[in-house]
Image 1 (spheres, rainbow, N blue to C red):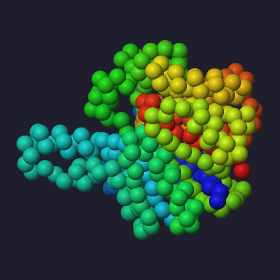
Image 2 (image 1 turned 180 degrees about the vertical axis):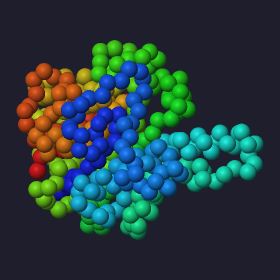
Image 3 (image 1 turned 180 degrees about the horizontal axis):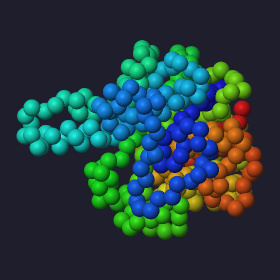
Image 4 (image 1 turned 135 degrees about the vertical axis):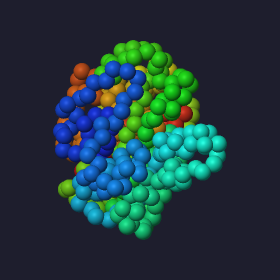
Length: 351
């Protein structure tokens, strides 16, 4: 059974939300942390509720509603999300109050809103959707797990117009901790020149990406999701990629564009270089994390990119890594890994 991306929506550190053009106005940052460009939430959420919502909940709900509007669907058949850290802002707030108030007279709001499934629950409550609702908390495979669950539901004909997405926020506390652990660079960098630094560490990011999946063909669909897979700490990477393409009756030569998850960390980027030099020497290459930063569900940004590329027939100059590129990209392979542990492949095609 075929799976189509009916519509998508993305909130990121770039102007990707709403009708603002397709990465025609790239935002440049100087530092090691990219903050999401937030829309006017009042268009999607009651102002009285906004005050009680954390950053990630507002991003997730707004992206989900925009995705439904773009797909001309009022009620999804299921809601599935992926996140690794969940509502970090509310979690930090609650833990801080525990210490400051010595575990006495704690207001419950932050605790209630701190659970990982809060975003999916809020979307369902606002839409009054009583259908299947699930959240995957699988570290660097969280969004990919949600995507797998959605495609399984479609294949089993359990639901249609499935809303699937990934959300992640960056707060001061988590940014400080992850910087100390060596995930992010210590020196200030310019994001548009990220791949020139050749040092350890990357830049932090955050965002929310949602997609409406269906098995119904339509000229209004954005793209076809031919297949996807993920694996943990692979030792035979080239073989896995070749096998994945073979399962879809393709070879490396059939791919028009490869979008990798290069993030400027020399320890992680070496894998992408190895794969591209081995399998995709004659294929156009692109990267995206210099635009959105590194976070556990950054692959949502990549999938949003791919869906828009095949729909609009345009490859943004800001993501290209090779001087020569295919003018019309009909088949796009997304390859991403998080900390060289959680690897994923997604294959997107024009309809």
